[in-house]
Amino acid sequence: MKYKLIIGIALVSLSITSCKKEVENPETNTSFALSDAMLKTTTTAVAETQPVKNELSFYGKITADNNKMIDVYPLVGGNVIKVNVELGDYVRKGQVLATIRSTDVADFEKQSIDAKGDLLVAKNKLKVAQELFDGKLNSESDVFEAKSEVNKAQSQLSKIQETYKIYNIKAGSIYEVTAPISGFIIQKSINQDMLLRNDRSENIFDIAEISEVWALANINEIDINKVKLGIDADVTTLSYPDKVFKGKVDKIFNVIDPETKAMQARIKLKNPDFMLKPDMNANIKLSYNEGKSMIAVPSKAIVFDKSKNFVMVFKDRHNIETRQVEVYSVVGDVTYISNGLKENEKVITNNELFIYRALNE
Figure 1 (tube, rainbow, N blue to C red):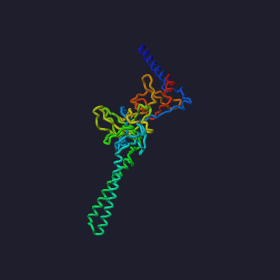
Figure 2: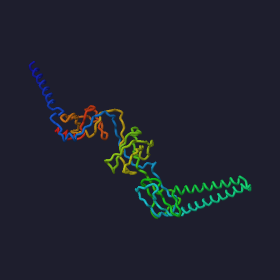
Figure 3: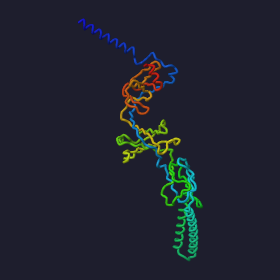
Figure 4: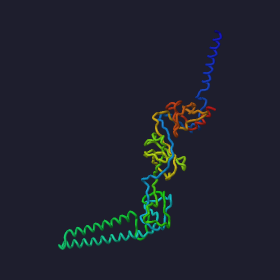
């Protein structure tokens, strides 16, 4: 009996000692206080319940908007006298891109002269037919026939004049290739002194207006069911690794490329200062909702130490707690917490590592 009493007293003593140690080493260190200077640079964020997003990464490329890209074809064949632009140059609508000396232009001029002559002759015939009809020397059908000839001649001349207007044809044997839109030269297949055949079917320039561009993501088959219209997209390139271009998936091409075994999704992007160039390689991250909510904090609030994750819970300058948390996932600048943090608690997002070391080392 006496032996049992001694063991009982020992257990109670051990329990009291254990509790005393917990009290002596609380997670909140009240002896630490932020200085005025440190307090000014210390920022916090409120833990909020947010829908959990997940992120998928894909490779892709930047392309010009097909609706804002024009192929430029030469109207005529001939000898290229001068090329005024190079690949990558910015051109304005109406700017002369190249000059061609061509006998075909002289043929257009001859057609114009002939059409004007035919119209003049037809008008004179109509005048004579009308005068004869007024003198009862011919029939009304003769007048109608003369009017029809005038209309035909006028139609032919209008057609030629419209061709002159569309292709900017001028008198003589010189033809100027002009830019139909403002944009960048993204393809060029013409050089000075080149001889162009008049039956050439290939274009000589491609011009793209790239104030907005497309990012085309190659979606693997396993991820197709996760990609939906309207989900957020972050696009980065090798040229600007720290610059994130934001957009949304606005079109899904529901076909599988037999070579890549991938489906493409399109993201429209604003292109300030024309930073993004067609055919650039791109890293594309698409984020989607998982259908549940969790506590979320900025990723920079997380302190990783000794294979564990911590946040510094801020109550006031004298009351800062080191709190271990369980991280569910990290999506960009947001970290989702599955356990260890409550909604509306404040976590430190700047100076957190310094404060963690001051409290725990």
